[in-house]
Image (cartoon, rainbow, N blue to C red; front, side):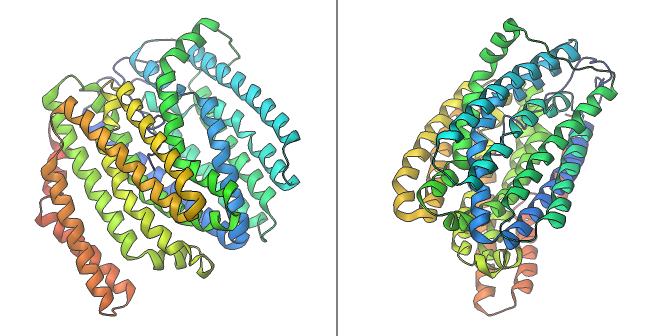
Length: 496
């Protein structure tokens, strides 16, 4: 499953003055448009830079080392969730919805996270002493687990809470650029795994330090503050989201962890290559979500305004989903060969399977993530928990027998299970599943796929098929009234 970190993608509208971050009185449509503009440009830029970085690594490191690095990142991600413990969402919400001393609040929350980071880094280091693995793997883990501390110090949730997206954008781009430049300068052969891990670790600290500098710029201060009462309250509030985060990460990374343990790093390298491309394909879903989330939360009790927001949100989500899904399936071979090279040819069928999952991601983020904005976190968590259980069972059944293909199939079937649960809760909450928009999306998808495949069978050059497929997509979306310039204009200019 490829949910884009919904527990991190939360922004809340700020209705009161918070020190230097006073946003009260700004027009809602202006805020949404500004969020879309800033978040989309920065998110797309940083994701593309990171994608280029990993494409470069895949070619230089070759399949085995590329698989090993992805195994390290996947396994460590579970411990990073413990350090975070869902406090990003709760912290952003508290700052947005209450007048408080931000410096004290942020200091308390960071202190709590640093304590967790120290504990788990020590435990991780002790475990590494007793496990039977190569020194390369042990040293790589020991270096990369320093990201426990950079993650504890990361305060992007503060700026999301007050809808100030520029610092987040700056930090993302600078850290991504650092990684890319460092890779080009230092990584030139397949035995550079330690170099890669060290660069990724330093990059995570750059991301955190840029935001801290920006935070201090606004006359705030950070210090270590241990407050047991605060910790108890924040843990109680964040536990449901922490559980959801764990469940989501099972979808994200359990398949790669299991492939790394059961199969070879070579097999994982093929799977990781296809996986990276699908992650890029779902970036727009995160951008759309982050842009709409504050207003979906603000109007959760106003059915008319909520319905109007959901109409636009659904159209944007579904349109983006069918575009990336259809293009990914049609041009999987060309994408793999251009990005990763002919050595990753075995990734092509895996990419086609995983691309089928892309539209399911857009569906689930349409029906699922707004539930968090409407105070349905527990219901959302239950569905994710069931889906995670399905994913675990399917991974244990399918991966030992079918390896990477089993992981891909388990991902799709788990996403379907989550989809069933989310549409039920969404229907109970809104009495609307936007079926007309969904049918138009299905119609547009089938039209693009049929025309594109026919053009391919006719032997037309792939680049010309791509251009014609995009044209067919635009025309179909317009003719079905799924998304048009007039609808976008109405959305941007309407008085919400």
